Image 1 (cartoon, helix red, strand yellow):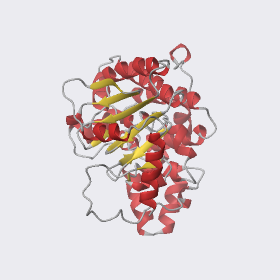
Image 2 (cartoon, rainbow, N blue to C red):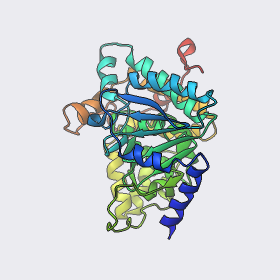
Image 3 (cartoon, rainbow, N blue to C red):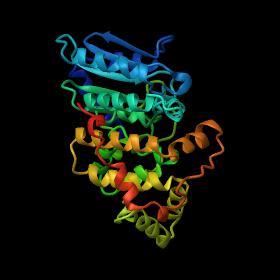
Length: 353
């Protein structure tokens, strides 16, 4: 079967790096306490373990500042053959960045929105340009900041528990951490669809979409579970348009259940975020990874200057009423000029590598 073939392929790949299949089994099943991130050597493998299971291994500045220097050290270490990253708790690889902390600090003019986005993108770029094999075990929820820690690496291993999404337009942001690079490089308009709607890919679909490079069943999965359902992936022709408004017109004109559901989803998102994201994906298709991060840093700071991000965090994570009051409240009210300004250079404050 295809599942057995994929499992065989990943076993062969792992054997090429010293037979670390047993190590992966231990990585997936082991748990740690205390530190927010653990950095250790297992044989000739450098292992990064995100260890905040109570908050689904959400990525914070402290973790970034521990991971980055260790990555650089292992990259030049002759006794380290490859790097592997995983999460603890069994529910998530990493459910995203600590956006609530960013919002709280940003509201009072604190430095976190400036510092965290900058250092996170530098870390993401280090992963994308890493000279040694980088293996991300994306077992469980993988969103936002967790995507940045995995998708740019050479190998991304999904399991039947993987839940992948970039849901930032629902909180007044945009699919950052390099979303402007990898999303437009997925087939057809799939990347744009994922970026605008925050649609959740599950299990094998994460590999079918091209987000994961390999799929293996988690080692503690009962053997009597039924196979994954038929993939919902399809050609996303309805997302072929020169504007977000055009996409919504396509969806309404189509009238299928799928189209209606996506139109309803887009209606709940920040209009400003939708338009920023649309342009981000358009531009990112022809930019290098580093240039995408420079662009996204500019966008992150524009979102911090606006109001939708703080309102989105309030509605989704603080009050949890899921009724954000976006400003502007409609797509028609979001001018092209206001969108273009979000992409303007920041001069000396621009992201530099």
